[in-house]
Figure 1 (cartoon, rainbow, N blue to C red):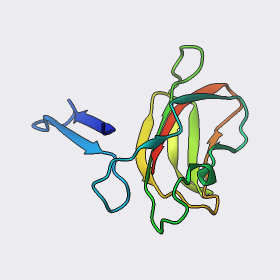
Figure 2 (figure 1 turned 180 degrees about the vertical axis):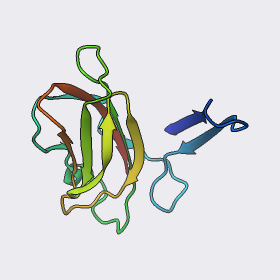
Figure 3 (figure 1 turned 90 degrees about the horizontal axis):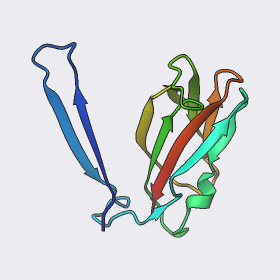
Figure 4 (figure 1 turned 120 degrees about the vertical axis):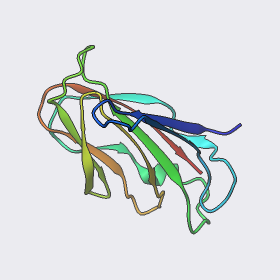
Length: 140
């Protein structure tokens, strides 16, 4: 059984745009074999502007003999206590390189390499206001 990600983009600000729908089956690196491992779907409350590890990449290495492995990460800023505050951003880093900022309600789905050298996925809220992230990683 495959894990599939589907996205639909639509816009009412661009005339004639309509919508785009695309689907991706999560696969192992360079193969047609489905990704079978996951960190599970989790939530993490952050209430400090400190950078913290969301996922420790070394813990996602199942096949330590592979030269190339694949992973897909999903992260969503769901706000706090039922309130999605578009002004509260959370920076996302891979190996201490900033990927972007997820404001309330924003999410990302992106590929990430799983290496044993600790290229962790880190997050850092913009301030000390409480915010909750939902996340899951699928990997081989």
